[in-house]
Length: 328
Image 1 (cartoon, rainbow, N blue to C red):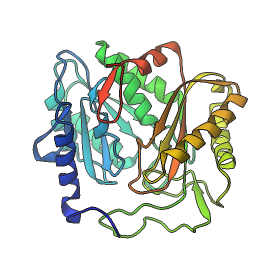
Image 2 (image 1 turned 60 degrees about the vertical axis):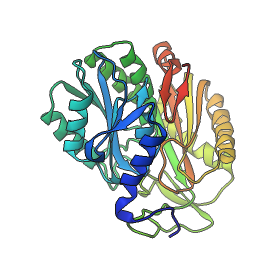
Image 3 (image 1 turned 90 degrees about the vertical axis):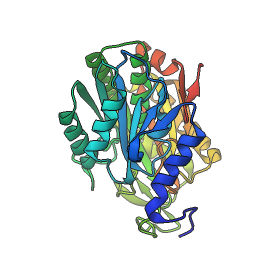
Image 4 (image 1 turned 90 degrees about the horizontal axis):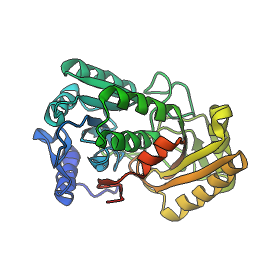
């Protein structure tokens, strides 16, 4: 295993220290490295809180700031944060309007966020489940929450900045999640520092369709194919799942898993856009880059969100975080 680490036990704490120092104008750390919080809170605004296992950076800590999250709770690599982390984060960033938890549909995350909600006052939750690859997987009952989580956080975050009420934000988050579909493909595995070896074995001439962001198995193992063919299979799965909703304006988000260069991500974006446009989709908003990663995995996911005018407006609204910045 070749990684820039000092010791396995200190990777997360040292990473968080570096992140907070690099973005000290935007964020600060909660006690005991339990959460990353927005440095300047807005009184009377519903607080948005998310989190999950580390290893998916910049999700979620990199999305803390103006126009998105007020706090993010990092667990150990690929391990859910604990309920006390979320409860302490909620107490720290709630300025009186309540908190909305945005939770990826993984059993550990859902269970611990639910426990934190029970420990806190004025909390509602949005659970994301945008992955069309499999209905149930190693860590979930029902579909996994993957890259579409970022889209929910951005759109709901913009609405929260406008002063929208907690119940309205939950309804908006559920609506965005319902309009969002994703699917990924892995070319290599990833290596968790504590394990010191790849999460799964895959041949040099193979790929895993529908892989999860922790390396969970997908829908099938296949021989490596040209990018256009890979995009066609993923886009077909997304389009089939959306059914009649596939026509109209959309956001197309091509996300890298950590070890895929921008050159290849833009190539996949081009291929995916062509596939969706053949099906009557008008891509009016785009995002390309590595935002919901899986450590050093090579591969990507494709996310499509069918947009109405309200969602598009909130997507366009100013944002200032470590990972996303525009309109400021």
